[in-house]
Length: 220
Image (cartoon, rainbow, N blue to C red; front, side, top):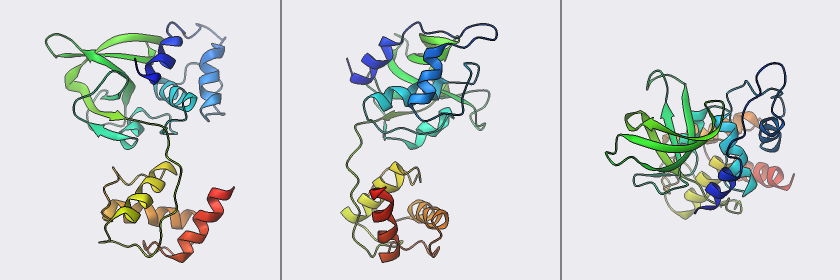
């Protein structure tokens, strides 16, 4: 059994409390994974639960309460294993709404996905979902030690230094897609946003100014 599933199964049965009281363990999921402003168990918490489990193992997290945020975390997989993350759409494939949990397996006919997750019937439980509503499967691992790439990198650059930059951007919550070592539009957009948020020249070029900022950021 994967380490993530072990953590998740330990919480099996934790449920919301009806009325004005709130389940302390659900509030703890939020606190431990960085959602300090959440003070009730009515707030949708499926993504919070996955963040909590990943936090326990120092795995990559989405850092967001939106289920679909997990589509930008880890690595896309087409043949999921138990413990991989599964993301579903709700209401419409084009809406922002969704659900996220841990993949357990497919039904014999392949039309259902068994998922262990939080906020399933208001509890941590195992439930079956329509396989046609799967947005994707993601595999997360222990966070790599952040490594600052060497400059200069810009759109069109390729190689291991670009991959380091992409991994760093993703871990700092500036999603640029799966690291592939190719400095494309998504990488440039993510870098521009990072530059804007830290009041650097917004040129989408990874140069010494960006290096200095990252060195300062990672030391704090």
